Length: 412
Image (cartoon, rainbow, N blue to C red; front, side):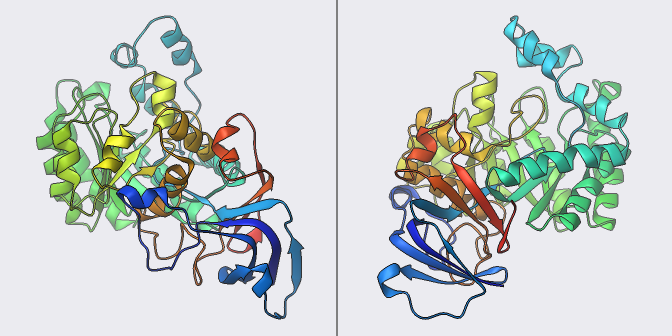
């Protein structure tokens, strides 16, 4: 199918395909073409330019986008989208004064989700997860990473990863899978962390590798969860199976998780709500992408990732939703972009770069997604008639998206 979109008010994030990510001051620059056209052939971006330079092209359909803006679809590099049920009662408990840690100590939090998941059939889990995936696609997400971590048993973890694999097979967008067996300590392993980690490494990890269920490996490196030593042990084990690290660090405390991730050549270090100057300095010159999850900060009322300090150090930054039932029950990347501007003092240009090209890098998708580039996949957002791209983060309570194209086809 050859589609030509004409009279585009602005074509946003137009880049040479060789650009993998943007860092520091580069994040303030968002290349764009006003009054543009975009030509799609089958599932790829073929060409684009200014309307005044539009050549004669043989097409199957021409679509007039007068007054509308086109930008690459959002890339969500950190989610826990495959889960069962919800945790709205814990939401009420927090309103009534309990902390996230207190709820977890009472058997809530991740352990609550694990109990529900292990009681839910794989078929039902797939049904719930597919519904969430369809929702976020319509909100503009064109590539997504999904973690396990709500099973905490061999059967539960494999169930989640098999559901992710089925989503990958049935939905026409990149779905990356991450094995997060070390998300929390199951109640039956209380005070036996070494035994649980041994079980994750010696029993679950080989099964994950045998069924080819994951590209990445993750661990919740945090006080009260898993230590630096635990992190080193797990990530070394994952390397033997070709799993690259993408890890949870610095959500509540800075304990050396950033440095551990860098040492293991992690593709990304995620959360970063609590960052020391040393943490930021250690990322300089590395290939590890810092990832902020402002939806979690909003929902838990915890600090936001210090985006300005990270970018002013010359570093890149990506944004993701952390979509999960306990600390960020939203997969809406539009809200994440708004929060980055409102709460993290990122400019619209910086936030859009963080949610597209840099977020694609955090899933190893820079060569195919994250920008309007010749030869990349035709995954893009068409807005409603809006005054500028800054209106996207400004209008945080409105859905300014008219349509989303995945591999050159409208999801509507």
